[in-house]
Image (tube, rainbow, N blue to C red; front, side, top):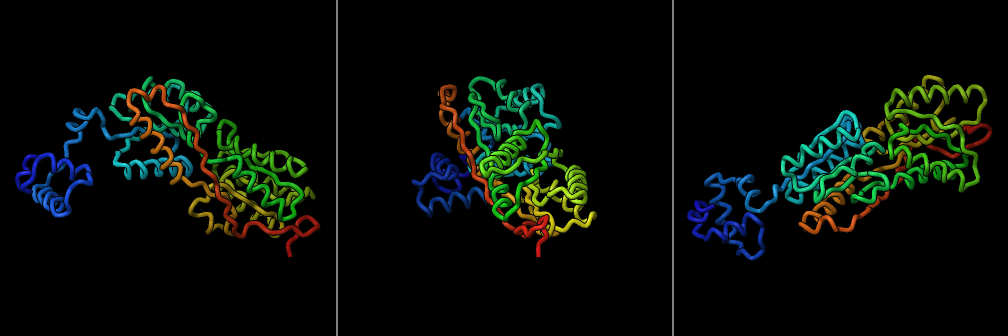
Length: 342
């Protein structure tokens, strides 16, 4: 910085102000300093800076199975928001979520000197592991259930399921069947809750629930079972599927069995993955705003970091991001008998 100051003909303090985007620097002075930085190839020593400021400008993220669209998109949203705030991100991705794995991941990140931690906690086991967060460590959980010892940011899964189910009921379907996600997943639990609430509020019967594991294969197998019900005369005309990938598998099964979508069965998914608008037919679904989740996480975490020693007494926050209904061609009004669509 002293070399930059000498070349630019300014003080060391002025160089520091430019590097930290301080507003009280004249435009021509800023340009001179930036030109000197470019000329000398200057790069800040972040390790030395951390020793002085006691902040590493690095945030830790603990996630699970980033091959899945939801966790991967959540981590991407967090990383982008952190970068915009001037922070780097160190990610630990776990194969399985359990108390030991989360505890070890948090310990590893703490040893790296991160300023705060985001835990993507989509399962109950991960939410329970949040009780082991180090004292004084700023932290936020994505999903996280109803934890009261850590701030939580989540998408309103219950409302998303309500939107999907109400849409199908509004089209005239007597009831809506559901292919759920795995039982231990908080998102799956919320979507089941919203589906049941919407049916109960409308005074409609709640059918038997089928369960998948988020994969297209499990959706395909559930779709085969539902197609067999159709062939046997069961009045299955509308399905809410807990994610788009399982919906893709169900659509494949219906195609193979000659069950037309939406002529015979209407299908709604959840997530709005990039491929969903190119399914055959294009999939009606519920969109999660992962960018908004990432921004909220970083905002909450930075407030705790700024609180410094007062972080322990910092009031825990809960932010719920609303989902958005996306209408496409996989749903249609029902025409009796049995939902034959003209």
